Length: 463
Image (cartoon, rainbow, N blue to C red):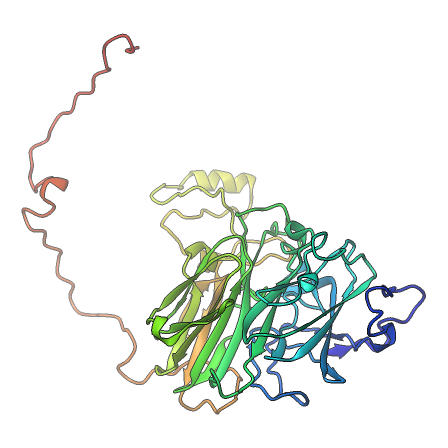
């Protein structure tokens, strides 16, 4: 993490709108803090203001603030950024303070909050505080509730964090371009009583999607649905960090969806309850056990569970093509097609040509040449071979020996003897089918052959 002490130095670098900041004065701008890497940064306990239990942003960080006469001040900088989606691929995105998504903003219920937003984009922008109750003029819809923030200008948003919960922030200006380029971030308002809704580990991340042509680095912003990169906090597996927890910990995972489609988020090995939405906390009587929760566009879900089962448990979107990296949408299904001979002829014209899908897979094992700055569709090595996943996939790592507050990756789980699936080496009996199996849906064994004659329809429509 680096600071920008000289951020506003230089002739005409970033003019501050005097009208926008007249109440607090341009000289009082807080420092703009920038993050320069995509690791998960565990925030320390708050050094000033009221106490709260910080959240941990997956492959992200929380934005520092300063206290100014009882007001908690933040400085967001909207700007072009370069985000590493995973080792071997970077994308030219737009975000905040050096990253996409932007840093998580954490406050306490009842805090007076002042956010300075500086625009370093090549076009105007605004910030909408998704789900917040605030004065209409602070809602951040350009043209409706405020003038847009022009390039080089700084606007100030100021309001009271009136209710505890989980929220998001994003532009309401040229959304099709700006959100498609990655402009979004998380906001958490903690309850006044830090023991209320307390958990041992509290993770947050946003769902986002991009369409980046293989070999390119800038998203196609006019894509509506057929994205090829599905991400947790603008990272794809295996570039997504794991979620290390201590066995017995009460765990909360908050997930916000700012993509163009819904995502059924599924956790292996544990059942959970949906305890919160961006509308507030779910009453205890309205909760039920689940292993998958569907998060619609513009929604947030907070799930909670006790990490009772040790092991490496998958956490992923259950739409199968969302656990892949840059794939093509026009690839035909070739299962059962014999490519022999054809592939040899094509290889004479296109050296390195690879037959895909003749037997159904395995894409993770294919090692064809890729354009620069492009990831394989499925990748990632586990302790027993290729995981064959990408996109929205990571691992919840539950360990009895994980220390309280320790978020370091513990490595792969060592299964106790007799608790891992193994190969059967004995004889395999032949499959026996009952004579009447299938009823009318299937022909009986040794049924006589039937000749079917197809005739063209007669009448005036026959040709």
